[in-house]
Length: 503
Image (cartoon, rainbow, N blue to C red; front, top):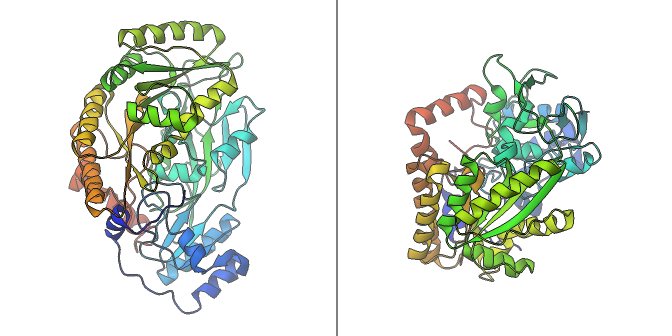
């Protein structure tokens, strides 16, 4: 569905923090072409607009030029050229972000890294792989298909893996396998002035820390949540760049942690009398230490929308999608535990699917939640929120959020990775209706502050980008934000890397 940006909420959000653009220096585009070749540089308006927005509602802000480097040396040369001329630089992966992270609010040069798409090293024994920024998660898992390993972080979209690292992405598997942060072992970063940094040292991988082994394909094969990588040498530069949203440098290579594919997988759908019952069941599952792999929540509006959109016959009720990973024997006990906790919370409908096709249909329904929500109001557009709260506060916060949606008359079905306290409202509204757009903006600010008041965060996985900078100040406090600014100034003294974002 084509999105019309620049109206309603998108325009309001896109204007905040924008600075006047400076024209590129004379002959600067020719200098770019000298580095990467004329076919790999474009100043065409259509190309610049394509690279001036992501999937968010922030108004399009096109760069002055787009370049497609083919190798890390070219990224270094281009960065050094921009640095000398004080031209802003914006990294671009696949454009699937949700907080305006690629919008060139101060113009400059967009570095489209999609053509650097090599998988350069795979170590089955070390459970690691090295990828360039153009490699997407689906491409990686297709490459790993016959190895018995996989990369489980799944934000839904087929995002680039370095882009996922840049935003600190999460997804449906995070409750068992973690977010991007613990799954990134090393990064090769081109700094704003063109220097090259390996955040854990060139070619280095932290070693395995001893831990439990369960559910792999053979003796001695580790399976999450352990073993972990181990390192105590200095500041954790890798974690600094994970979640930096392109404001500190270009992620031109990532060493990622891989996981064994589970021997067996089972998925079920459980429905509940109320939202509170469904979320309370989630809390009990986690407290009982059931090794759940995925636990996804749909409120009754979203469940009904997904059912209609995907052609699956599901009741319009508060719903949990539950997935278990392990050996055939361990799944028997896990299913029994899950069924008991679902019943204790008034849930029903526990028919387990283990065949790949049936499991795939259920998760396709979940991944199509965005389009199912848009179908509730044809002709309208969507804006996805993103907060994360402590599990103990999750039932109250979800119920309060549902009540808030009803009180302000907004269409905002809820969906979330509730196993780690993360949930979203997909707000579907008419961008031509300024009053409704303002209600949406006010609701998102209340939701962010509700999460902060509960001890959570204003963004669990989408990032700060353009729209959540004020909430980031409230979350970290002035001293925390000033510390981030000092780090930014140390690495990017002229504020050229993705300016106007995060801080």
